[in-house]
Length: 53
Image (cartoon, rainbow, N blue to C red; front, side, top):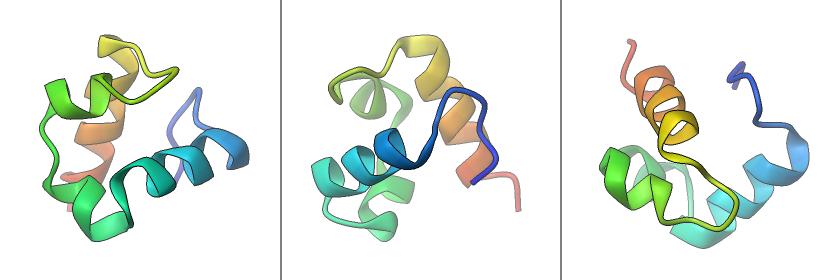
């Protein structure tokens, strides 16, 4: 949540691509960047957001 460039549709697509939030949180930046519509820079933001706690 709260990642610029990731709205409800992209969030849903990411979770569907990875099979859930747990799987997404285990993914590397490169794996996230391979998801449809996700750039390397956006993947870095998503990864940082998931691992900021």
